[in-house]
Image (cartoon, rainbow, N blue to C red; front, side, top):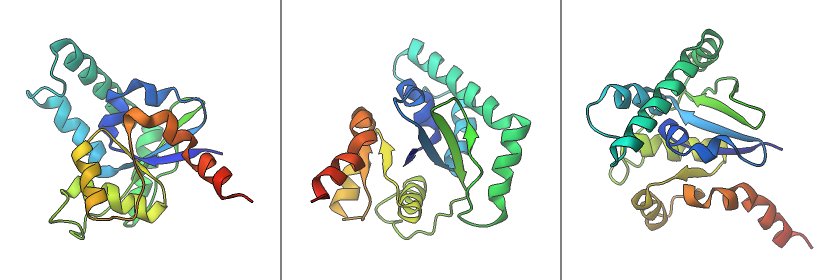
Length: 174
Protein backbone atom coordinates (compact mmCIF):
# COMPACT_ATOMS: atom_id res chain seq x y z
CA UNK A 1 0.00 0.00 0.00
CA UNK A 2 1.23 3.46 -0.94
CA UNK A 3 1.88 5.87 1.97
CA UNK A 4 0.64 9.41 1.36
CA UNK A 5 1.86 12.76 2.70
CA UNK A 6 0.99 16.40 2.10
CA UNK A 7 4.18 18.40 1.60
CA UNK A 8 5.48 21.57 -0.01
CA UNK A 9 7.00 20.93 -3.43
CA UNK A 10 10.29 22.59 -2.45
CA UNK A 11 10.77 20.05 0.36
CA UNK A 12 10.95 17.27 -2.22
CA UNK A 13 13.72 19.23 -3.97
CA UNK A 14 15.65 20.00 -0.78
CA UNK A 15 15.45 16.59 0.88
CA UNK A 16 16.73 14.00 -1.59
CA UNK A 17 16.02 11.13 0.81
CA UNK A 18 12.31 11.70 0.16
CA UNK A 19 12.86 10.49 -3.40
CA UNK A 20 14.29 7.10 -2.32
CA UNK A 21 11.88 5.72 0.30
CA UNK A 22 11.93 2.04 1.24
CA UNK A 23 8.29 1.66 0.19
CA UNK A 24 5.86 3.35 -2.24
CA UNK A 25 5.04 6.95 -1.32
CA UNK A 26 2.71 9.53 -2.85
CA UNK A 27 3.38 13.20 -2.12
CA UNK A 28 0.46 15.63 -2.40
CA UNK A 29 1.55 19.16 -3.32
CA UNK A 30 -0.86 22.10 -3.08
CA UNK A 31 -0.56 23.81 -6.48
CA UNK A 32 0.57 27.08 -4.86
CA UNK A 33 3.69 25.27 -3.59
CA UNK A 34 4.49 24.16 -7.14
CA UNK A 35 4.24 27.81 -8.24
CA UNK A 36 6.61 28.77 -5.41
CA UNK A 37 9.31 26.74 -7.15
CA UNK A 38 9.37 29.27 -10.01
CA UNK A 39 9.75 32.15 -7.55
CA UNK A 40 12.59 30.39 -5.71
CA UNK A 41 14.40 29.50 -8.92
CA UNK A 42 14.36 33.09 -10.19
CA UNK A 43 14.97 34.77 -6.84
CA UNK A 44 18.32 36.25 -5.93
CA UNK A 45 17.66 35.27 -2.32
CA UNK A 46 19.34 32.01 -1.27
CA UNK A 47 17.23 28.98 -0.46
CA UNK A 48 20.02 27.44 1.62
CA UNK A 49 22.61 29.24 3.79
CA UNK A 50 25.70 27.64 2.20
CA UNK A 51 26.49 28.75 -1.38
CA UNK A 52 27.26 25.22 -2.60
CA UNK A 53 24.08 23.82 -1.03
CA UNK A 54 22.06 26.69 -2.47
CA UNK A 55 23.35 26.05 -5.99
CA UNK A 56 22.57 22.33 -5.62
CA UNK A 57 19.03 22.97 -4.36
CA UNK A 58 18.34 25.54 -7.08
CA UNK A 59 19.48 22.94 -9.63
CA UNK A 60 17.07 20.40 -8.08
CA UNK A 61 14.29 23.02 -8.17
CA UNK A 62 15.00 23.56 -11.88
CA UNK A 63 14.86 19.79 -12.46
CA UNK A 64 11.55 19.57 -10.61
CA UNK A 65 10.11 22.44 -12.67
CA UNK A 66 11.23 20.68 -15.85
CA UNK A 67 9.51 17.50 -14.60
CA UNK A 68 6.24 19.38 -14.03
CA UNK A 69 6.52 21.02 -17.46
CA UNK A 70 6.89 17.73 -19.36
CA UNK A 71 3.84 17.59 -21.68
CA UNK A 72 2.22 14.51 -20.09
CA UNK A 73 2.78 15.82 -16.55
CA UNK A 74 1.54 19.30 -17.46
CA UNK A 75 -1.62 17.76 -18.94
CA UNK A 76 -2.19 15.73 -15.75
CA UNK A 77 -1.73 18.83 -13.58
CA UNK A 78 -4.14 20.84 -15.73
CA UNK A 79 -6.82 18.21 -15.05
CA UNK A 80 -6.83 19.30 -11.42
CA UNK A 81 -7.86 22.83 -12.44
CA UNK A 82 -11.39 21.68 -13.29
CA UNK A 83 -12.68 22.16 -9.75
CA UNK A 84 -11.49 23.22 -6.32
CA UNK A 85 -9.83 20.43 -4.37
CA UNK A 86 -9.51 18.21 -7.39
CA UNK A 87 -6.40 16.01 -7.50
CA UNK A 88 -4.23 15.47 -10.54
CA UNK A 89 -3.61 11.91 -11.63
CA UNK A 90 -0.33 10.63 -10.13
CA UNK A 91 2.88 11.85 -11.75
CA UNK A 92 5.29 8.94 -11.59
CA UNK A 93 8.79 9.93 -10.49
CA UNK A 94 10.26 6.45 -9.97
CA UNK A 95 9.16 2.98 -8.85
CA UNK A 96 8.43 4.16 -5.28
CA UNK A 97 7.54 7.85 -5.64
CA UNK A 98 4.67 9.69 -7.27
CA UNK A 99 3.46 13.28 -7.02
CA UNK A 100 -0.15 14.45 -6.97
CA UNK A 101 -0.97 18.14 -7.38
CA UNK A 102 -3.93 19.41 -5.36
CA UNK A 103 -5.98 22.33 -6.66
CA UNK A 104 -6.23 23.62 -3.09
CA UNK A 105 -8.01 26.79 -2.08
CA UNK A 106 -6.89 28.90 0.85
CA UNK A 107 -10.04 30.05 2.67
CA UNK A 108 -8.57 32.00 5.62
CA UNK A 109 -10.02 29.40 8.01
CA UNK A 110 -6.68 29.41 9.85
CA UNK A 111 -5.61 32.83 8.54
CA UNK A 112 -4.68 34.48 11.82
CA UNK A 113 -2.36 31.70 12.92
CA UNK A 114 -1.13 30.27 9.60
CA UNK A 115 -0.02 31.83 6.32
CA UNK A 116 -1.88 30.89 3.08
CA UNK A 117 0.53 28.08 2.14
CA UNK A 118 0.34 26.57 5.62
CA UNK A 119 -3.45 26.82 5.49
CA UNK A 120 -3.49 24.97 2.16
CA UNK A 121 -1.27 22.26 3.64
CA UNK A 122 -3.61 21.89 6.62
CA UNK A 123 -6.78 21.86 4.53
CA UNK A 124 -5.26 19.34 2.10
CA UNK A 125 -4.29 17.14 5.02
CA UNK A 126 -7.76 17.36 6.55
CA UNK A 127 -9.50 16.76 3.24
CA UNK A 128 -7.37 13.78 2.20
CA UNK A 129 -6.87 12.44 5.75
CA UNK A 130 -3.09 12.18 5.34
CA UNK A 131 -0.25 13.58 7.47
CA UNK A 132 1.93 16.56 6.62
CA UNK A 133 5.73 16.34 6.29
CA UNK A 134 7.58 19.55 7.07
CA UNK A 135 10.88 20.93 8.30
CA UNK A 136 9.20 23.98 9.86
CA UNK A 137 9.26 23.42 13.62
CA UNK A 138 7.36 26.63 14.34
CA UNK A 139 4.57 25.44 12.02
CA UNK A 140 4.44 22.12 13.89
CA UNK A 141 4.27 23.98 17.22
CA UNK A 142 1.38 26.14 16.00
CA UNK A 143 -0.51 23.07 14.75
CA UNK A 144 -0.16 21.52 18.20
CA UNK A 145 -0.94 24.74 20.08
CA UNK A 146 -4.12 25.39 18.06
CA UNK A 147 -5.14 21.72 18.23
CA UNK A 148 -5.63 21.34 14.48
CA UNK A 149 -6.77 17.70 14.09
CA UNK A 150 -4.01 16.52 11.74
CA UNK A 151 -0.78 14.55 11.98
CA UNK A 152 2.43 16.46 11.29
CA UNK A 153 5.84 14.83 11.02
CA UNK A 154 9.25 16.46 10.96
CA UNK A 155 11.13 15.46 7.81
CA UNK A 156 13.91 14.26 10.09
CA UNK A 157 11.43 11.58 11.25
CA UNK A 158 10.57 10.48 7.70
CA UNK A 159 11.40 6.81 8.27
CA UNK A 160 9.21 6.77 11.38
CA UNK A 161 6.40 8.54 9.49
CA UNK A 162 6.50 5.80 6.84
CA UNK A 163 5.84 3.18 9.51
CA UNK A 164 3.63 5.23 11.87
CA UNK A 165 0.23 3.84 10.82
CA UNK A 166 1.47 0.27 10.97
CA UNK A 167 2.78 0.78 14.50
CA UNK A 168 -0.56 2.29 15.55
CA UNK A 169 -2.40 -0.59 13.92
CA UNK A 170 -0.35 -3.10 15.94
CA UNK A 171 -1.16 -1.22 19.13
CA UNK A 172 -4.91 -1.12 18.37
CA UNK A 173 -5.28 -4.75 17.37
CA UNK A 174 -6.56 -7.18 20.04
